[in-house]
Amino acid sequence: MKKITLLFLLLPIFSFSQIKVVQFNAGWNKANDVPWVQSLEDCKTISYTDVAKNAQSKYKIAVVPTIIIFKDGEEVARFQADLSFKMIATREEVQEEINDQLMSDF
Image (tube, rainbow, N blue to C red):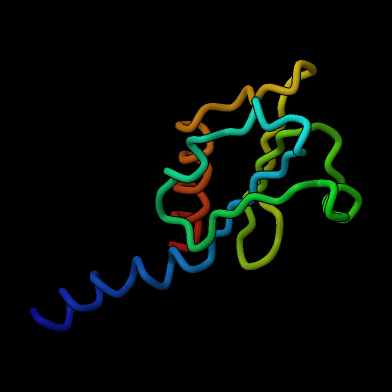
């Protein structure tokens, strides 16, 4: 029984280490930062990147803010702002995508 319990305790650690979430924005659009990104769960890394630092062309950012979910270094989902530069995706939608990505390994 101890081995099974230990496996279930360690399994989430290995699964969670695969997900990275990055919010891309620009200094001039700080008013539209997405504060709930920092409260997403089950992510190894949550970071903020200013598109002025050459990230715009590397990640093909067309509008800010943009939230990208990476799994094992590959982009698996992207959420972008509308034409008024406000994020239209909700925290729940982004968290659901993270959960779906984690569950796809099983």
